[in-house]
Length: 200
Image (cartoon, rainbow, N blue to C red; front, side, top):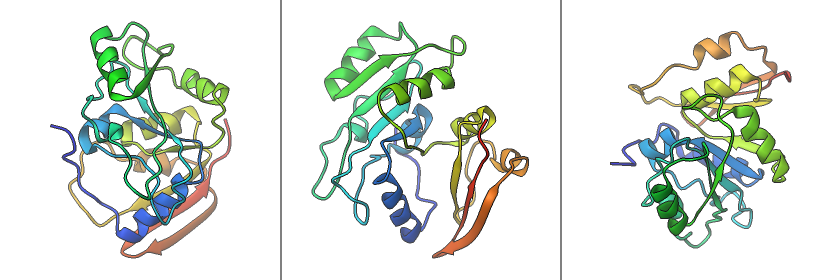
């Protein structure tokens, strides 16, 4: 089943995420986050619902369920941008048709190998489509690959008090990163790390 995740951030930290979503052209995530958490990735108050960034999913083999909450009609005071699924060319045609019927736009992009999309091709495509500010809201694997590739220029990292998460820690990647203009603060019970990273 999808959507078995739970909130690890406080309401105050989640409100900050809504503000960030309302300031970007696209929200980028991985299919693992869609399957685990079934997020909407919409803009809600205190963000500006009139802003409707694309909701872009890295989904090499089109594993996004057509029943995902991404495809539900937006509610009142909810800004929902187009859903764009990025896959490896030749992904399952029946799944592609089902996802298009659900409301997705599906784009085949070059793969780094037969299992993973090429991040450089992903970001080149986003740039060509006019996306200048992209918010990465994803799990540790997608986040780590972006950090390793030098595709992150600003961090807004929230650490909640919930224990017991799965997946690799970002600690190893952040420990070796050169953080510029670092700012540590608290939002409700959560800790927030903000910093810039030097370009590639």
